[in-house]
Image 1 (tube, rainbow, N blue to C red):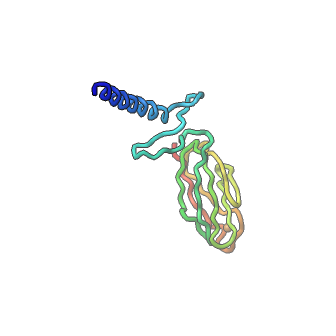
Image 2: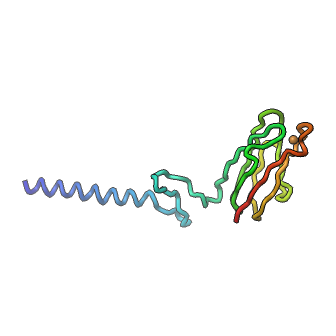
Image 3: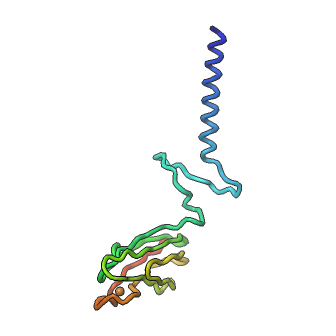
Length: 139
Ligand SMILES: [Cu+2]
C-alpha cells in the first residue's frame, strides 16, 4: 500500500512539472530573441504584432462617390494594405501626401504622423473629383 501511494505521488509530480514546462515552452522565445507568440488574457493566441512581416489588412468599400469607412486610423510605422472593394464601377485610391497610389490596393508604411486626405484615382463619373476620405496616422 505504501508503494502505491509513492507511485501515485510520483505520477502527480510528473504531471505538475510536465504541465509547468509545457506552458513555459508555449511562451518560449526564438533564437533572435523575439517572442514567437503572445497568449492574451482571454487565452487567444495571436501573432506577434511587432513582427516585421505582419501587414494590417484594411478593406474600403468604394462606390460613386464615397468610401466606407471614410476615415481610417493607422499607426506610424505600421505596415498596412488597403484593398478597394468596388461596389459599382472601378475606383482606386491615392494618398498624395504619402506618395501612395493604386487601383486594386495599396500597401505602404506611413513614415510620418498626421491627417492626410485620400482620393479616388480612377475616373468614375461626375462626382469623381469629390470622392475622398481621410487617413489619420497616429504617433
Ligand atoms: Cu473615381
